[in-house]
Length: 447
Image (cartoon, rainbow, N blue to C red):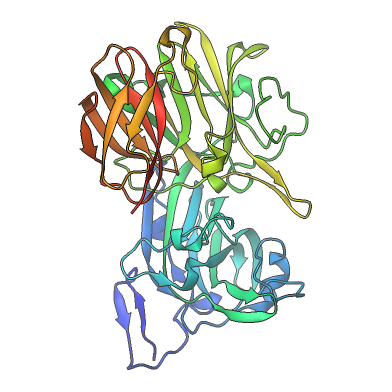
């Protein structure tokens, strides 16, 4: 009958080298993926592999996916639905981020390129809920950025139908093939920020700073600021006080957090969740912007503003460094960047965690002077040496990758000591924290 792998169902169906349509080729035969809905914020689940090899398409659904999927042939008014497979689940009332990917054993998809659409209702009467083509079309497919993600609220008791399709590749008029193969599905329950879109309703994050002492980092989340998951959209009437560094000059649906100062310096950034948590959360393009305030909501005093750490290297997430005053109230405004290319405009949104480190890394306090953090050789192929200015001969070091995830931590490192970080090729931020201050340096790992 067919030769495909359904590890989620725990079965292997094969019949020589002949292929037939996958068992879930049609909506009516959708595979139940209810196990992806964990019902607990911050807890994710994964299923796979699934195959779209020899699947058929649903061209009758294409009209609704205009400007959501982008694989139509040159001159076509609608996208192409070529080799799609179906999944189903019943909503539990939670907000979720769901993604396709290649992380599970046996996954191999041509060009790592899917597109997905979520519907409610019944197979005979489908209502489009959310759809996505690429996580980040501007990034290379080999890193998986042409897989797909959606954020949505799974209304309790509602039946949902998920269609996953392979992208139809054209080079102008030349057809290059449809993405086929096997892929994984993942989902994570995220905290909706629906009720925290103004300063007066800020979500308290005092707990974020509790684990920062002794060189550790604090994490909190994951949060959702999407229109599909939390119902948050652009606010054209918002007060933009303190957001002067934001390149889009737009409130794209800011969400607000609050905390009480304890007299220590900190750096807060948009991040993956705790390093030991392997669950992946995605924010479109990793492109966030932040503003920090002190005082009362009626009389906010801007403290810090951040958009991109280093746009030249694709580090588009925000990072604010600040010194807190004990007992003072602070408000952190988190927002996604807004693009407008003349044809389309859209805002970064998705799921994210916040990370806090002890030490003002992006805006050193006056007492820190010209603190220098260094790592060499740079670029490096293997071992690197850490160095820094000041009186402290030891420091705690953490290394952050381009997704904001901490990939390496070293405690009580001696100045000018050599270490092999065993990191893959890429760009990283090295954070050096002494008992007196902190700073960052860039690091590139090459072959």
